[in-house]
Image (tube, rainbow, N blue to C red; front, side):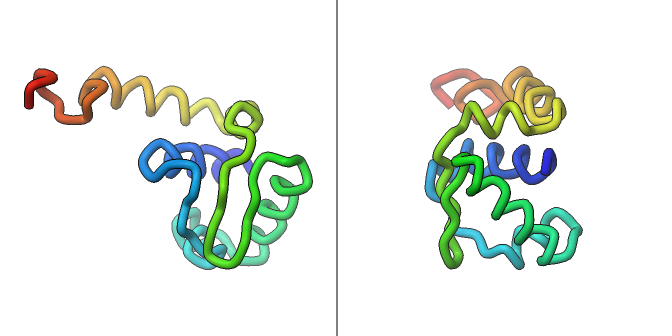
Length: 95
């Protein structure tokens, strides 16, 4: 569950609250079986953290997802912020 939460948070950082993603695609990205993703998505929905429909995931409670994510999410986000910068260009804000 932790890796799924981290991945969903990262996807939300890049794509916004509405993430176009099938459970099969998420399973491939995480290297797990689709049945595992199905169980995790169900648990996250039951907790009110996400809303998932056919091919779409909507983050409902970002703070809740962060509480369930592994510590790698914050570490990677902080590292990328330091290396790439807030604009994502890696240079000055004018780049």
